[in-house]
Length: 178
Ligand SMILES: *[C@@H]1O[C@H](CO)[C@@H](O)[C@H](O)[C@H]1NC(C)=O
Ligand SMILES: *[C@@H]1O[C@H](CO)[C@@H](O)[C@H](O)[C@H]1NC(C)=O
Ligand SMILES: *[C@@H]1O[C@H](CO)[C@@H](O)[C@H](O)[C@H]1NC(C)=O
Image (cartoon, rainbow, N blue to C red; front, side):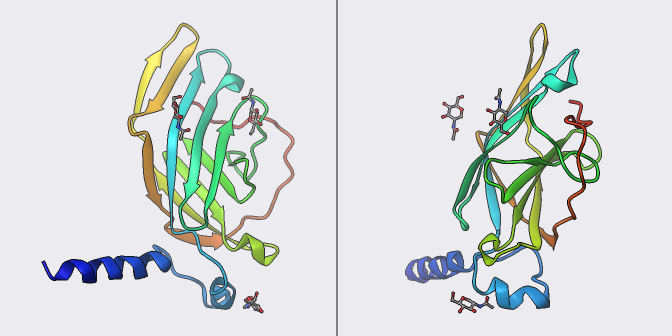
């Protein structure tokens, strides 16, 4: 029972510098000491639609929140989205620091990336983490509509890696199939 106040004060200290699930590279430590690094994220209202006939009508939509860096943004893939990355499967969120990959094969699930210390000029590193939303799906005459069983899903960023160089994109569609 006496331990309770101590636990509360410990929790307050921990939330100020949350345990990270990755190692900060030595040459990034000075810069990182001046900013809040991405530690965890929350995905809300994850929804997908997979069309039976036309891949370009497939959509992915959710809300992203990072409680530490205070970024909240909408992420979606729809017929007007342009994917980037070597596999043309990375979609940007409304906040340019956040991007995602959603795939049901390979590294299956929802990968989120967040640029580290974007206010320090040209960000060079990004954190990433994967969650695997469990879906409830409904078939319609045109396709399949799925919604995550959990309204909010918490994930940990577990890697901090250099941001891959931008490659020119020509096609407007990725290869994702539901
Ligand atoms: C950290 O921020 C302070 C104040 O903004 C600045 O003077 C200092 O140069 C920064 N240090 C690094 C390593 O970026
Ligand atoms: C999630 O979706 C429901 C139903 O579409 C909506 O009422 C709710 O506001 C959404 N929550 C967030 C955080 O967007
Ligand atoms: C498609 O997604 C973009 C953001 O990526 C959004 O601005 C636009 O409103 C979306 N279009 C539709 C039809 O939902």
